[in-house]
Length: 197
Image 1: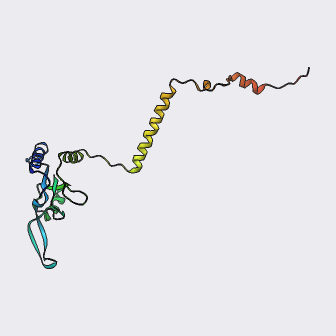
Image 2 (image 1 turned 135 degrees about the vertical axis):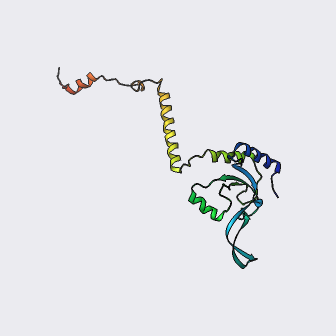
Image 3 (image 1 turned 60 degrees about the vertical axis):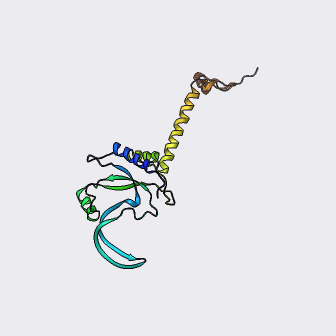
């Protein structure tokens, strides 16, 4: 049935109930087995016999919550409250019992092929930490701009560090020529005179 020991799931659920809960005592996060979860829905139901359509009728009753999962698996759920009276009334039209919050899936323990995975405490902690501390996702161009700015800053730092104890640029070359400003002015006003002996 499951790929995880129930004692591990129970201990994680117990810890989650102690750390994260609402005022009425319900845990904000919990781990559940997907095929055990039902929710009371109101709506038009269709009945089939194999592939043959039999009838359509209106009903209110429990329906499988995770009917769309290919195989049963463990699911990390979060207690969610609907914000706004109009939105709540609209949701209660279909989900009859969600007026006081509804548990919604956050992370199903499945791989890319929808095969069940074992529950892992570090994975649960990481997912909850990311939910509690959201970060803004950066675009590739923003990441490139950050990388270029960091590289420019690093280059400037090393140029400054290397230039602290070096000689002045005038003294760098072996055969440097030094010209004063007076000599430059003299060369502009100097007139060549040739005198023969």
